Image (cartoon, rainbow, N blue to C red; front, side):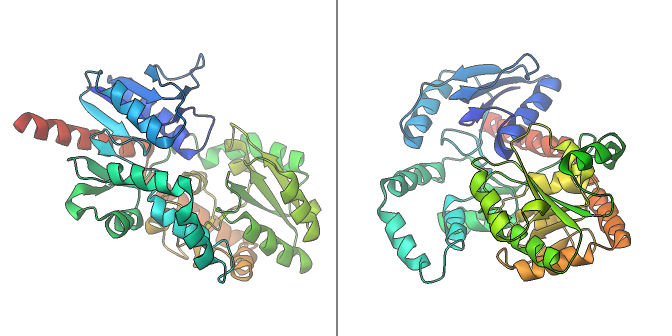
Length: 383
C-alpha cells in the first residue's frame, strides 16, 4: 500500500507527535508499505526510517502549509492519506493535539478565574485565532474522511466543538513500545542516573517528562514537592524536557526546594530516567492520550496523572495509577506522593501499570490504523 503521512515536522527528536509518527512510519515500512511523508522540515539521519520525503517550502501560516500540502498530495499516486492534524486533504484526519477549541478552553484554567472571560474575548480578536478558525472549518468539514480520536474525551470534543457525526469518528488510543520502555532497564541505568542527579538510595525520585511545563502541571508538581520537603520527606523531582529553564530554577529556589529539583532539559534518551525513577508525575491540564504516561507505565512506574488526560480512560484509580481531578491542586498531589513513599504500594501499582501497558502495545496501535486503511480502500473500490 502507498501511504501518505502529513505533518509539519518529521523529526523524532521533537515531541510526542513527531516521535510517534516516525515510529509509525518505521513500522509501516517494516511491514512492506511504501511511505511518503509531506512536511516542511525533516530530520533524516543515517539511522532514520526510509521514507520518501516531500519537503514543502516554508509557509507563512498554517493555512499556507495546508494549501501547499494539498497541492503536493494531489500529484502523488497514494492509496491512503493520513494527516496528523496539519492539513485538510486526507482520508484519515488524526489530530494528535486534539481539538484546538478544547485545548484553548483548558489553557484558560492556567489563569485566575476573573481573567478567563476577558482573555477568551481578547483571544477571539487576534489574527491567529481567525486563521485557526478558517483552518478548522476546512479540517472538520465532511468530505468523507475518517476522524481518529486518541480518546473518548477527544471524540466528545469533535462532536461538541465541531459538530462531527459520531459515525465518522474512530477512537484509537496510543500504544507504547513495551520492549523499549521496560522495568528490565533498571539494572543498567538506575544507579548511574541517580548518582548523576545526586539522589540518595532512600529518597523518592519523582519524574516528569514534558515540554510545555505550565500545561503539563510542572508548577503543581514543584509546589507538591515543596510541601513534602517542608515535612522533612526525602524526595527529589527530575524534570526532563523543556527549554528556557532558568525561570523554573528560580521558582524552585523561591519554593525552598532548589536542592531537591533537577531540570534536565531536552534529551533524546528518556529511558534511563524512567529506569531511575520511583514514581511518574503528570498533573496535566490537557492531554489527548499521553505517550509519556504510557511509557512510564510500561517501565513499571506507579503513575499519578489527572482525569483531564485521555490516557486516564485506560487507567483505574488505585489499581494501576493514582488519579487527581484538579491539575492545580498541589495539596492533593502531595497526598498522593506521600502514599507512594510506601515501597509495597509502589511495587503493586507499578506492576499493574506495566500489565496495562502490555495491553496497549505500539504494534496493536499500528494494526488498528492499518485495518482502518483497508476499510477506506475497500469502500473506495466498492464505490
